[in-house]
Length: 170
Image 1 (cartoon, one colour):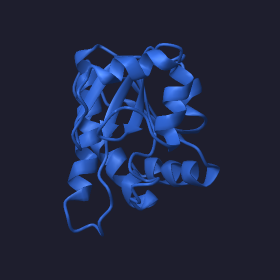
Image 2: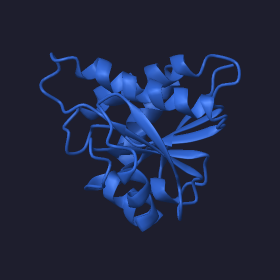
Image 3: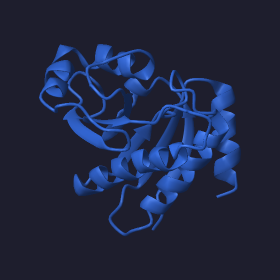
Image 4: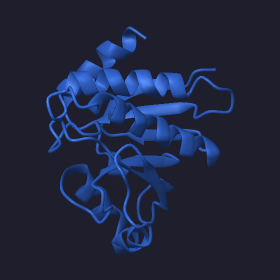
């Protein structure tokens, strides 16, 4: 059974799901955008937990508790920096989503929320990133026992509309 994939315009730090995904940098020690917001909302315990993880490579993900967040866990993934599209960025981005679903499945999570990975400071074109995200997540959740509820959490209503249009075609 394929998971329910949906778009939602919200602050990802307010979602009560099994895991939210953090669009992190390689250090995992906080930054700007969604990364900084998640670290602030989770509290200093998240930074301490991340220090013990030894960083993360592009396309991989690592799991921590959610601490003060409504989400029970945080999956930290490092997306690619956009370099024009000819350097494997799409494959790297898809790997982020697949790896998060893989860890969520191994952890027996039923719900997960993703931000738009790599579309902020890393410059990935939003609509292209959304297409990649939906395709990767749809394929990764086809197996029985997979995550059941996937939220593509958008900060802006226009971004939510892009996801909704793309999801209607799936």
